[in-house]
Image (cartoon, rainbow over all chains, first blue to last red; front, side, top):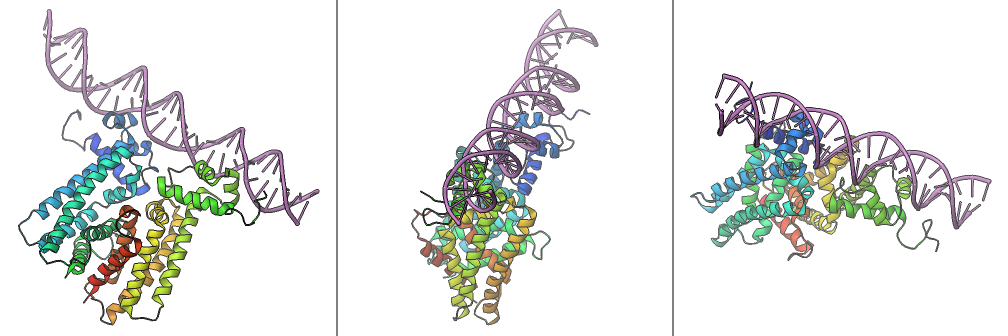
Length: 198
Length: 198
DNA sequence: GATCACATACCGACTGGTTAGTCTGCCGAG
DNA sequence: CTCGGCAGACTAACCAGTCGGTATGTGATC
């Protein structure tokens, strides 16, 4: 019954804590979730939490870091693919919708609780987010330069337009609704591409 | 120096409280704003606050009610106008962007703090919001029925798409940025209408 | 292979600080 | 005199983070 280091049994404590925190933060919000509730949900005690994490805020930051890493990786993959811009933008736009829906908890935390981070950590997150935004924008601009997209709207605004709809997903999307993640993604990517027709 | 009842001097206490709460809620978030800070910003004490409002939550709800009333009124006016659907939808879509930008504080509170309301009050707000959504959706459907808008995307999704971008404004829009409210509104309304071209 | 030193992983009572909301009372106007 | 409008001290609850303590594992030494 040695469950100590690395073993193979049930998920290791740090991950259990992160999972519990994610669920609770999404459910009640960061401030409304007490550290006590998190450790109880994870089946440990405060000692364990503060053994692995420096503070409650670190837990939140870890959730962010996870989401950012995942989405940046996926965007890079789609953007670097060997296909026409329209295709690459479409795929990237649809993919971010799918992964957002598949991680709705992370998404609602991300968009609702950013201002709970200390200025320092907030800056860090904003910087990473900026990188993501730029990569996406580069796709739009490429299409605009090569004439396949309309130049009527500044590329920055186009990106914010699309991410607005992504952001908004956590407000209205219900897993038991009529549309699956893939369908929503196709529709939203369609709307974007249609808006960009010259 | 009698500033007591209703007089004409500086704004009456309930409104001062509401204004202070709005600013602070938008700045630090609902949970991070203490009642003490609100009353200090309004230049009164707790006694005054609890004389006019039943609880801190009531203050938040009042902010919501104000926003909802305003936006519903404006939407109704635009939707009931005597003009072709494209025009009415365009005007309504642009107007909600302008008023959102002009009340960014209310907007960020609205979208970030809804889950801080008790289930009961939350239901109330959702209902009002639903009414707004439906009115907007009716415009889209009308256009789809009469053939001026594409039917490729379900009307519900179209509405959520647009409101996603509105919702998102409080995240990225800066008053000192390169675009004024009217310009942003025109662009966003354009994007919507372009996406709806058959 | 027994003992010791030390580290990792975790427990849970406790503390210092904060907060929403209450309550008693003052004050000026009608 | 009384009543709305408000002041401000007070209370009960809560909560992030701390800290001394325990259990188990690991490697070195004899």
